[in-house]
Length: 188
Image 1 (cartoon, rainbow, N blue to C red):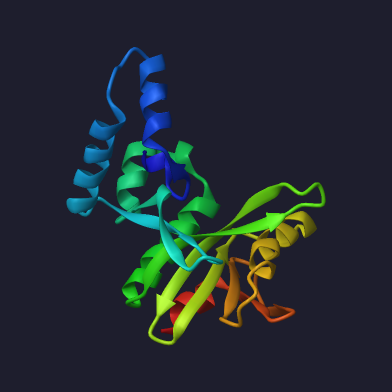
Image 2: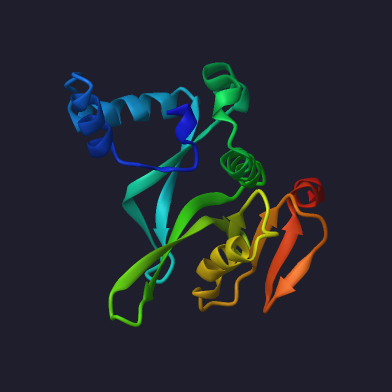
């Protein structure tokens, strides 16, 4: 589980995976375990937020560790995924700043008429409204930049939107700010 920070968690899929390994455990029991770890402050749960509908959803949550040292102890260097680690750090900082933090979903209708759900890493509920964040290790690659901006561009309100990465400098993409994550962390 510590290797899955920043990934959607489905207790049904976890139960099926364990069943494939010969371990039979009901999804409701797994859900109780996840809640126990949350209550013990080993990790936090980020609920999914429907940006268009302005409501919190009950499924496809993500979990973030309260201390990256736990992850390093359990996984060692084999769990080195800078993007997810950075996402965990940003999540904890948004909580430290006193925000209610969710993972966002925004739907996009394709040219074929099918709806595709896009993810926004974080929707932060602040005293001044909402703020939207995408987190990436780097956005130097054009495809990565396009992917990170795409979800934010689908949001039709005027709340602040930001891409945080380890890249130096700042940029503005039609109102979406790109900020170096270290500068952002030092800001407050």
